[in-house]
Image (cartoon, rainbow, N blue to C red; front, side):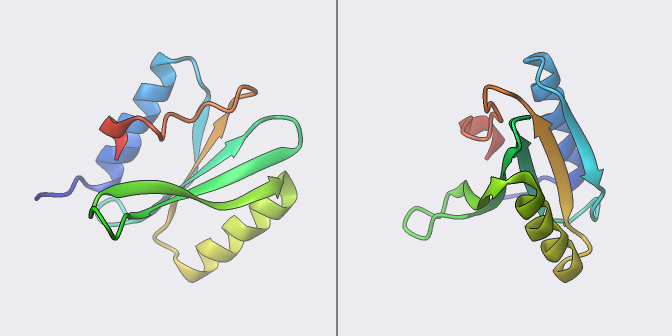
Length: 109
């Protein structure tokens, strides 16, 4: 199966969030073709979550899982460490008090 480029996925994700009036920003621009994507959800109350995409080993499906959850500065530090390890990593920050991120939408897998 052909894979979407990272840039195409990020652009589509940002467009989907805009349609739902959920603010989101690219805070780190990774490799356009093959960069991995990390999504930070900032609930604007001092807390945050970072999601990473992986594979469900039983089904082979792509799925989003929590990388870290907690106070925003701690989540930011985890993201900084990930960026040092993988400079091709994209980081998208979603800001939503209701905690919406749309990553559970199967069309965004």
